[in-house]
Length: 189
Image 1 (cartoon, rainbow, N blue to C red):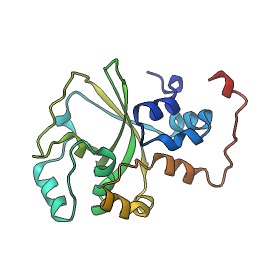
Image 2 (image 1 turned 90 degrees about the vertical axis):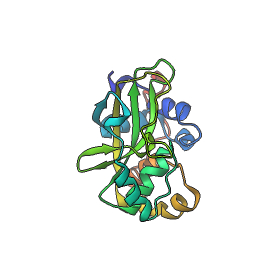
Image 3 (image 1 turned 45 degrees about the vertical axis):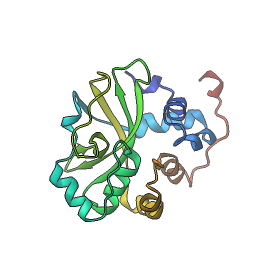
């Protein structure tokens, strides 16, 4: 699947609603170009077990203040990064073998060059059971630096915020470069 042919602007708003509603205010051409130029293909998995954390790892983070919320990917990945900076915060999407939403918005952690996906464990820290066979899953994402994530520490811990920070990071990356309201090719998208 070629990323250049995907309308990420529409995909993020539709599949990730309401968490990506702010993207409506961004020019579609610029957003799609930014995603295709900055998101990295990370890995392909054939089951959740390949990316879930070890129980000991989860319990260690809980002792440091993490409150596990199954399937709450944006909250979990940010909270983990804020508690332990050795876990990088990444946000992006997964391309999967599924006709209903083949692209799913998602946030996850990377530690020591490996994906650790806390949203793929249940309340007992066991691997989630996939409701449908949608594997393989291909992870794509962009790293959001810890210093930026720290700006959202209060809302993350007090509200278990599911704000993926993608819109916020896009705006941060473009604050010195004006974003045109319309691109000459916009009508062709």
